[in-house]
Image (cartoon, rainbow, N blue to C red; front, side):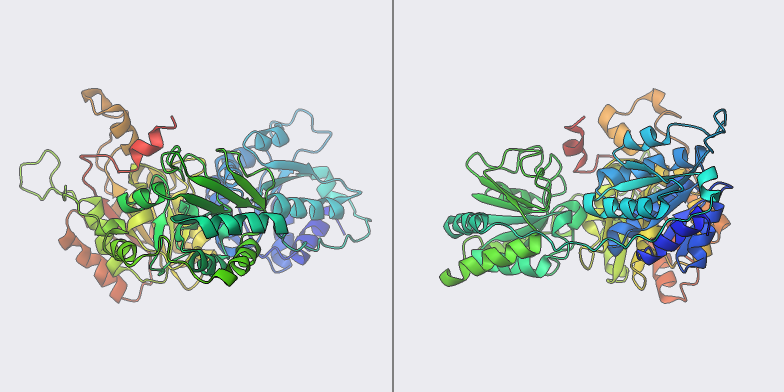
Length: 552
């Protein structure tokens, strides 16, 4: 058996179920080997799209996918998506061909290892004598470190005969439990706290029931980082997202906490609003699997190394003798969360401009009005992916998600153009849910080639384009001038026509009355995806933008 066959065989044995990529001569054989061994393969139209698909699939499926690319240029095309995955802690394997050792002058030869390491990924190289061991180690590294791992596959090594004995797969170790001393310290802090808040991040996914029970026992309110939104869906004391996306009420109550306890959450500038959500006398505790995480972004009073669910369960047991506390969980707080705890319930002045009103930009819908209406219309059982840009707070916060696996928030690298392919990966990871993509006109045009992928795969996706005919974040950050035309503002493109050319159904929305076309699609056979070209009012920046640019 040749090395490329052994690599494919071992990956299938390790449980890799899905691969994404663009085929070139260098990665054809190993990708074909994966398909022949039962691994599903999704062909993207661009390697950057394939990387974003794999990233989203890993986040929302809990499995390790493969990204497969050609040597040199195939990998460079994928680097932005790999960088997003690396900065988001996504475990995935990148199989990249590499010129043969003798091909020293190949135009495909680049420093592939240094390229991916520069964006935070890990690089390894397959050798003929240890290919099976190498691929097992790469898979183990991706899982253990939560990182994309580049597996360089030199062409001469791929074609060599493999005589290596088999290497048994890695058996995952049990999640670490927090020490008894740390459990006792945290239980003591919660017992004494009068206004505790628990904040869960990516590392808290899957621990929702345990964290809810701990919150009930300690009288704590609940919140999440943006990437874990939906974890506490339906809980009457859920504040939704902590940080730049916080509602005024969430910011008030989190900022008024006397004890903040994070579970698998970085407590970085985004989640803590550059520290504004931590009061001067607030005690801060950080629980994380990574022993280096506590205190990485801000000082903490107690760092606890342990699994979120196991730690929450142990602390709840330690509190049980005292019975449940009311603390922050008063009837007044519950009523306020019910009445003003979601952005769609916060009053706003509608900035939409109807045609014929004399406005400089007639026929534009307020993005809040648009998204609130769509939230009521679209299936509740949905999976949402969002692109980056001024608009991103609207789909992220005004569209509800059913649980922590209902949102792919690819914003670690803040790259425009990853939203549409991320939505494809999310849809494949959560089949049966209505896939929804929120993107801007800039991001849609960057990723437009993947519209064909959506159609080819038969995904009943709804793509919402917040079309302000500009790079809106830059407009609002630097101000609008006459010199902006073609610089950060552009002619109003007919994106509905573009989408129809790929095989989508499409509607153009300038006001609430135009959403009848969306209702018609939802009531129909959904045999084609739908693109909504929403011409949005852009008179003021999204509320979160001022927070975001504080870090620039």
